[in-house]
Figure 1 (spheres, rainbow, N blue to C red):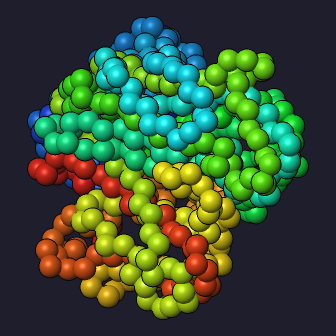
Figure 2: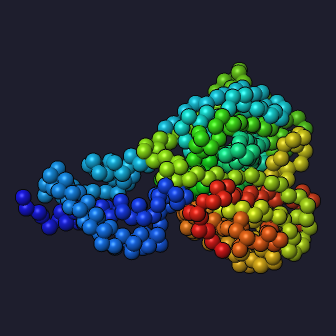
Figure 3: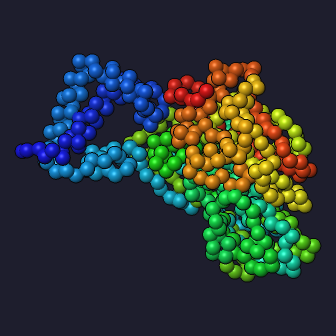
Length: 483
């Protein structure tokens, strides 16, 4: 049986693949954190050096010969491409590799309820979030008809109608510790994936998908707010892990899926819904009549869907350790209403920090108690916003606008008006998170905080901050991080 020259690259790939087994043995997959998911280039060099021992080389050579024989037996001199798993798998070997990564299942219906939207309402979902498989995303769908009558609204809130979901909260017990992995405004969750250059959430008004968030970011009365009938359908797509590019998801975010053994039956969802004041400022006679979408009767509907994954033969504990992303949004009003320099916005938690999101603008007044909405969003309210450790900047920032352009370039996106992002994972890997949990980086007595200059004044100015963090096992050795 002869070999064609074009077969060579594929045979070389098989022979190199045969080296994987002794390298993984040296790497001690079962005891090294995120294992194969986290196997990176620096450790490959170490493993290859160790594998160069006579025993390892002999074992690898024999394995390579066996693989070569099987390849020739089943494929002959054909030139079909052997592609990397999860990209374009072909044949038994490629399919086997792909099986380690698994695939998505869903979105699956979890629960639904009706709500009149005539007053702010808190809804606690009575059943626990199902985790019979690893969970990747949660999707919330709100659908309703709003008939605005008598008079046009005076002004529409910048992020309306997404503002009708005032806050979305998930709580649970993670490996024995009570945590709130998600607590944020619906409008912020709607914008989250856009910050990182991914398509995510959608809003439809009378069947028309609204434009992706950009600059300016403001609702117009002609689009939503003048007298008329509006069929509204909003999808909030909420990833439970870090947001990275599509090509990196399989290799980088698997450890952050919510696993059954980590959360058991503890996860619970709470939704805080607003009323018509969440849409903006109503005129004296403006009325809102809410019904089911597409009809003059019925009640607005909220549905929750879950998207699970099947991981094939890859399992936490054996090949990788799990971690969880914490995405909690805080509101700040103190110190941001007057022009000032070096204002301390927020003391930050000393945890592995992936991103810090700052949302700035003017608070909507005249809303019903319990509703918090931005009337407008602003890119000229703050400047020189910095993350500080003991009065030292982690990232040198002399211009928020320049920083916004830079991070937009890194993620291939346009950051919406009013949103500012400081990311430590523009590498597209959570491994480069800022190690604020490491006392060699941020000491036990050190100040870790977010500071800014306030360059405009306004009685109703407000800033919302999200410090996105990673919680992981303390003895997990697979974290490198940035310093």
